[in-house]
Length: 402
Ligand code: NAP
Ligand code: MG
Image (cartoon, rainbow, N blue to C red):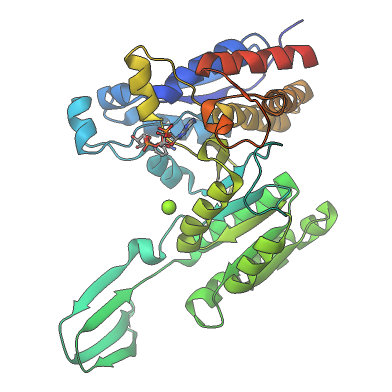
């Protein structure tokens, strides 16, 4: 069979530890035999980030702006222990943070739904995608430990000298104060990323805040979403047969539990932090969560939601067998290949992505899986495969389907 040709390169961001090992096996078994892969390779492994003073991370993000689609392996975010382990010149920042800041994107996380790995919520039949705003609110707060009686005020001083002042509270004893902010520009980017992603995936978009209580702060989020939707997206949503709707956060939570899934749930920063952990664990496993960063001008970076699986890597280094789940990393590849195909009008590439995803799911549904899934599956007598043999089993299923 002739290999599938590509016209535009995919930005490939290699990473660290166990996921770096999986990355190579995935390419050798599931990509190279079928695709004449055109990629612009960036090594985001910690050693090379250190060698280049992290320039490689910036370059990979600029390449994503240029070409539009990237696939990223999990990477180490250095802490004190990693400084010694890798003999680092500096405690380099999180690559995901750097890339997100350059692309100004929103992260969408969705579980991969497979028969035999059942969500705890029994009526959930389709994935629920969480879109989390990644700027501001409590993550950029200013706090004061109030020592005793006194008055707390909120003061804004404009560059033109205008002063707006509100009393927060007259304390008659100790307490606490918190100041939060957000900016219209970031909220608008968040809204556009959500609307674009909804159109892309043909899923209805929900957005929820607590605007009945927070009449200015949360209400601003609601208004910006609505204004942008009405002005730029309403007709496109109608044509695609999908909806945008806004509701209160408590109503959204209740509806999510009773729904069957199949939509995108946009959340403010804190809500997204909390709800994405709930959704991923309720769907079964972190190893089955995909993640894509979408910029407001339509650039895409696909990855797995989990980290570098350090514990498995150390076992691997010690010569022990590992059974690490590669599904989310495979889906990062298929997501990126499908998007590349879509942007380039390359139908073959899109079809290959569909077939590889279907083969991955079928392999698990046929009872062949890694240890993490075997522990939670409802299928009887699952066959537990090691890291490499699981990918090879997917290749067999894929070849049979081609
Ligand atoms: P992790 O890689 O997400 O793994 C935590 C644990 O979850 C593993 O020890 C394993 O549990 C289980 N697990 C996660 N992914 C799995 C998979 N694919 N297959 C099977 N089991 C899986 O988190 P970590 O080990 O705490 O972090 C390691 C490094 O990842 C850190 O340096 C962190 O900075 C980095 N990180 C990177 C990203 C990213 O690049 N997007 C995200 C998060 C963390 P058992 O050991 O019980 O089997
Ligand atoms: Mg969290």
